[in-house]
Length: 438
Image (cartoon, rainbow, N blue to C red; front, side, top):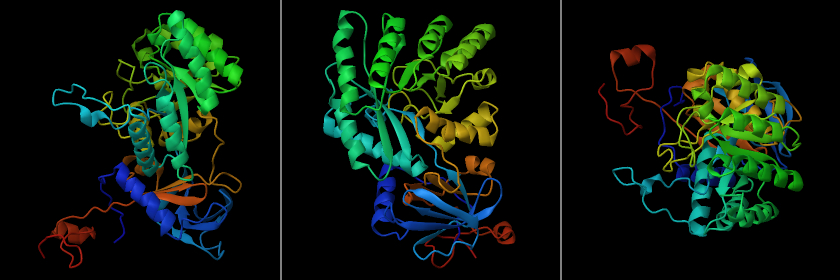
């Protein structure tokens, strides 16, 4: 039965892993990256129904439905809206999926920091987010303290095991960086980049010298040629202004977030800080689904004010079922839904915050459903973007030109005259195994 009436699935990382394995081993759509695959009958956001041919990890052609008759595997996307795949610009792989260690009074239980456990959690979390549609992830990973670089090494091992399914980029997050106590962490941050961290970050707010911390991170980023992604609440407009001034010349790009503290500032101070961020080209990564470790404040950044000033706004997930947000879903479409429902963004703008703007913040190439662009795509059952953000349950995820994850959901109703009259899917069919009256 078609799943035109979806329900919320019990979606978890094991399902995502099974789906990825199934598509790579049994599904004809899971071709090699160099092979050809045709997506048939997909709807685009402009209303067109098209066929899309993929090959070599890119979109080779887009034509009217039925026009691409290339021999080979085909995926029927009738009833699906085809979108550029979202990206996840802010997650925490090393602490993900640790909330179950909390007791009934929400006191955190013991969390294992053994490398093998971190690698397992990072892999499971990445597969969960892949199942939601994110084909590229930026994961903040703490370095220093007693762990040294072990957590980063574990996440890098997870990245290797996920190659071909999802692109995982670690961000090295040191503790103190200033004074005598910060000297070792400064050296470790350089080593982290050499090991494979794709960006440098950290939390200046927690250092005794926040400006010195930010300056140290920016200097290493300039030296190593890598982007910066810093945690800050943004509650101190002078501090945020100094950060923007220092960040303006960094060619590889600077992102900050979640900046929820800006919402608590007087309007004039917040507007001035927004203008400074815009002038420096700094991207703000807000976390509409909740906070993340190290950030005590709740709420989200003042999206309307920042956008009015010309600041690029991307949206991330933050905590994924850890103590900072025990129910975090890691779903970019939920982040877009919250931006649309709570921050007044149009559906298209909200989706851009988790797709094109997020990818730009992560230094990834742009995506459009046009020939020549990377084949990073998400098909969601639905006809319009607003409906997709409201009921985005059934999904098909394409990474590097092949299907890597599927989520299917079907809603059925108990038999009644109303259900019969509307033609809704119902329980009680002989092959359904569900009970229901005639």
